[in-house]
Amino acid sequence: MPSDTNAPVEQNPSAAVGAKVPAAPPAAVARGDGPCGPAGECAAPPCTLVIFGAGGDLTKRLLIPALYNLVVDGLLDDGMQVIGVNRGERATDQWRDDLHTSLQQFAAERSSAGKADEASWNWLAQRLHYVAGDFATPETFERVKQAMSKNGSGGNAIFYLAVGERFFKPVVEQLGKAGLLDESSAGGFRRVVIEKPFGSDLASARDLNAHILNYASEQQIYRIDHFLGKETVQSILAVRFANALFEPVWRREYIDSVQITASETLGVEGRGAFYEHTGAFRDMLPNHLFQLLAMVAMEPPNSFDAETVRDKKAEVFEAIQPLRADDVVFGQYEQGPAGVAYRAEPNVAPDSKTETYAAARVYLDNWRWAGVPFYLRTGKRLATRRTEIAVQLKRVPFLMFRDLPVDALVPNVLTLRIDPAHGTRFDFNVKVPGPTMRMGKVRSTFDYNDFFKEQANVGYETLLYDCMLGDETLFQRADSIEGSWAAVDAVLHPTAGGALPVYGYAAGGSGPAEADALLARAGHAWRPLDDEPKRP
Ligand code: BG6
Image (cartoon, rainbow, N blue to C red; front, side):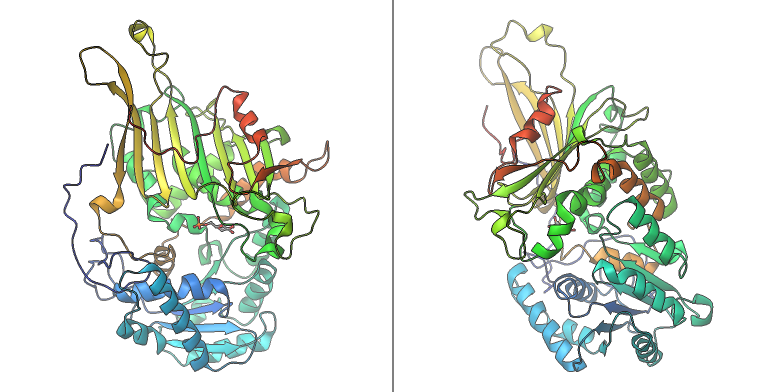
């Protein structure tokens, strides 16, 4: 069934990157300190954003486009400065030109306007400065300090670690030793943003936390999980807690099972070297998928205050029953309709045992969820790109329908669609029109684009803006990171039986058959990756 699309869709041309339809930002609650833009949101306080890894992909493809979108939305203060740090001498002008080229490519790919707005780009470009230096040597941090002293961002600074995980410790250490994290002498805030992967198991995450907390306080650390920047993920709490329909049934008495899927059609895309020692499980499960799990399973917080929300999420991680080997299935793509085998990808060992697919069965040991399986799966080179959460309700009693020409009623399923579709979908039963009583399954779909203007968003805008405002709600606290790793540590370090088997699946398929068996044991089945509506 189509959605009711009677909500007004405002028109507003803008050249923001990431929007398929040029659009103005939506009305939002004003949160910043600075002057307010047309969106009703206010500019963040002035600050210097220091990006370590200025020459990397993340900077080009996500951070600079996100900053540009914030400029378009009027959310950055005039005192904003960006200092890019990378190895290799190059002039600031050359760095700006490189970023401009990739922003234009990005705009051409993602925006129907097809090109970046020059005035907004120029505003940003004149605030970009490049500093060459190694990430671990003190001289680099002296150069950063000098570059920072030349600008007027009121002592506020964010240090963004867009670097490989091996640099997390040395960069924070050098920042600390150079006095750059000392807020009292800076006269403003000093924050550190750390990308994932935050550790590779419980011991390494603890070690990393302990190390960086020698140089910065917990309140200064912003651990990013970019899934939390997705609008549709943030909306999970709104759907759950702002609608009387859902929350009363959101518990084990009514919910049969929950499936969380993040399937990708892409392979490892030149990241073979990274992926070989990370694998699908570490890359996606204890971080992105657990964050989705927490949004679905957490108790209602009393407010959107960062600590309140993060306390509720931490309780979820604490309640996860530690996964055992038989709770997970690993797979690796082999040659198939979508392309070559993982082992034939560049920088991948020809006998690699790294998993490109992982499925897990997770139970929470608390009053709301005891006994309800949460099935999580993620994989590269699968049939469709789809990130979603399907909440399946229990079947209703069948007695009154037993004389009808129907074997079973379909269970109600609420699907929270995160990517690439944005919205919700609800499967339910109705009477098929006609003189006799026949049952049919129908589907009601809500799509964000039908109701709201499509937003310019690469997913990092909210995260950067929130960090400038000092709002840590969407960032991960040390205890949650460690709680997540603790829940999966036994799978990462199996003591009995050695390494877990890795089963093959065809590139372009739905994952290994063994993952189906994981659910079949409890009478469940994965939702098809391409279950588009069918007429009853
Ligand atoms: C990243 C992983 O964190 O998330 C990638 O390292 C994965 O392997 C990506 O492809 C998925 O994010 P998104 O936003 O494209 O769904």
